[in-house]
Each structure stands twice: as structure tokens, then as C-alpha cells.
Length: 231
Ligand code: APR
Image 1 (cartoon, rainbow, N blue to C red):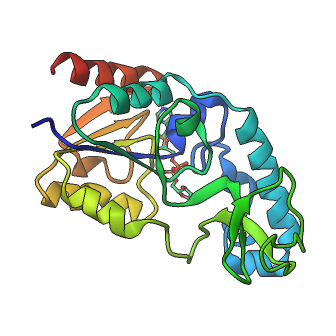
Image 2 (image 1 turned 90 degrees about the horizontal axis):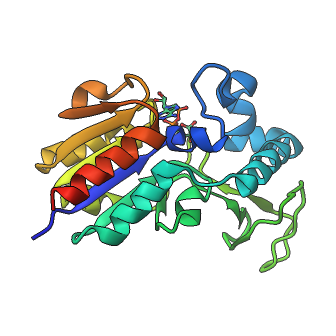
């Protein structure tokens, strides 16, 4: 029976596609205050600032192309005889552009959410304060992004995958934000082997059995090739 693989991805997998990470030198959180652009309070205080922040990231993400790391994971999902689940913290669509399926636990730039009725719809390129909800018509559109202090999406199914996987990999995440940073422990407790693929040590590196150090566009295809040739 082929092993079930669960892969957590973070901003580092999209870095070589030109999308900025959060906590690297000059990253997004060096340019913007989290409390201003990534909290419900910040949105209530200045929705225009928040919409402008996500409009810029949405436009950039739309232009970005998947890199060899995204493509390698799509190949693994296609060619691996067992289940391969990708859980991403990223809000870009680069896994999907590479042909993979991913569970977006922090939402997606391509999505809009009505904070009055909960309706979701494809986000227009530019959102602004008072964007009307196509369902209830309230001027209550917001980016469908999980902000700090909000519950990540799909946590139940993610927990089920972590408890039933044989191999857990984390790619390009600093391990600074929970619950994602705790996934390696959950998987390890359920008996999974664990591997971290990152450019550098992260906040959770010591929790992993194995490490592949280097840029994702190099170490991820190498890791996938190793898995597929060992079949
Ligand atoms: N290849 C592999 N790893 C890389 C590369 C690369 N080319 N470039 C950067 N990295 C690694 C860094 O070493 C770091 O560990 O990617 C990680 C980026 O860390 P963060 O910027 O903290 O991004 P992430 O871990 O995804 O952040 C988690 O925090 O702000 C919230 O919601 C936001 O989803 C985000 C969450």
C-alpha cells in the first residue's frame, strides 16, 4: 500500500516565482504593519489601506508563474500511487496553475467574502471599501483571507490528514505561525516520517527527522524524483 503524503507549503515555495515572503529580509512584514493590513481591527480602522494591500498582491499573484517546485508537487500528486495532500498557507494560486490541488488554510487572493452574510465569490481585480456583495447586496466585501486572530479554514480535514499520513513534508515555511507550525508534531505523533525543505533553518527545524536545504526550485524536484524512483 503506497504511503500517504501530506505536504505543508509556505511563502518560500513561491519566492522564486517572484512573490515576496513575509519574514525574510525586506519581506512583507518589514514593509507593512500586520495590525494594519492583516487583522479584522485594521480592516475596520482603514478598509481602503487593506484593500490596496491585497489589490497589489492579487495583481502580482495573477502575473506570477509556478516554478519547478510547484510543478514537481503537481507531478507527485499525479504519479504517486498513494494519496498526496497539499495544505498551503499561501494565498496565491501557483499550486493550481501547476496543475495541483491544494487546501488553502489562509484563504485565497482570488476570493472575496461578504462579512455581512458570509457569501464567497471570485474577487474582482480591484476591491474597495463598500464593494457590494452579489448575494445580499450589503457593501460588505472583504478579501477572503484569514487574518491574524481569525480561525484558519479546513482545520478538521487537515487534522484528519495529519493523523493518517505516513510522510509529512514542510516546504518554505518559517514555522512562526500556528496552527501550521504545529502540524509536524501532529504528524510525527501519528507515526509519520517528517522532512523539512527550506533555504535555511526555521523555527521548527528540530522537529523534523530529515532536512533538504536549498532553494525550493532545486530541492523539491530532487526530493520528488527520489520518491518516484524509489517506487
Ligand atoms: N526556497 C525555499 N525556502 C525559502 C525560499 C526559497 N527560495 N525563500 C525563502 N524560503 C523560506 C525561508 O527560509 C522561510 O523559512 O521560506 C520561509 C518564509 O517564511 P515566512 O515569510 O514566515 O512565510 P510563511 O512561513 O509562509 O508564513 C506563514 O504567516 O504572515 C502569515 O499568513 C501569513 O501564511 C503566512 C504565515
